[in-house]
Length: 101
Length: 246
Image (tube, rainbow over all chains, first blue to last red; front, side, top):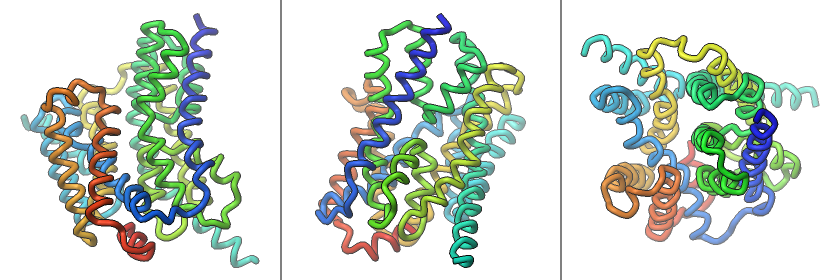
């Protein structure tokens, strides 16, 4: 059992690494194609947004806590780009709400 | 020469500093992954390697449920491919941040830890990506990720539920901190972000795609929205692209 868990972990690690290294190793020149260039430029914004919303709303015990965390997160992110401030702001919001509600 | 060494050190420390809050968030998330791993029956050492070698939250959770279900290693590989496919896209985008003069081995090393958050700060780095910046960030994040999993396995449910609950939004807060600030400077980005918010919400209720797993949903929406934005609003030149990344 213990041996096969390491086999699982090994397969997971290999697949995870190959996915990440393949594009980095293959695409070594600056892409000049305008479409591809623009496409890659927009990817991070779309991916991170889609991963955040609506998942953040359903991440906690109560939807109201999730919505509040989202609102506070957006507000804080407008005024600071500090990851730590925004992340802790969201957490504190949920924590406070769980005591009040 | 001495000046250059000083500069590299500065960049490395900046990476450590930017990585620190991510590391804290990682610790919280990987602690909960540790609890899952404990329930599946992993030892602390197995959990350590699981997180050290994978650096993927959704991927690890999906992998753990495969272990619990006793699927074949082939199925496991397929599951990992799907849950981690977004890193393929991120890696494509990140490939353009490397200076043409950067030695190749940096790509092999940095590939090891392309996570949602590391990708976020890497993309946000002004100009060409500095490998030393990434290594600095690795130093304050990778150990936290592995340590969180180990402690989650060892201590299980020692954290009160209210805290676990509150910590579960930390990662999303970080994503917001990466995505929102550029919206203030670039109208197209803010349009793309708002559209992504709307479509992402709607996609939870649209018949076909709402049945898909979270990672498939992320990939499909990313492909559709990024292509549409690229067609309608092509990035004019690299100078503007970098400016928008600020």
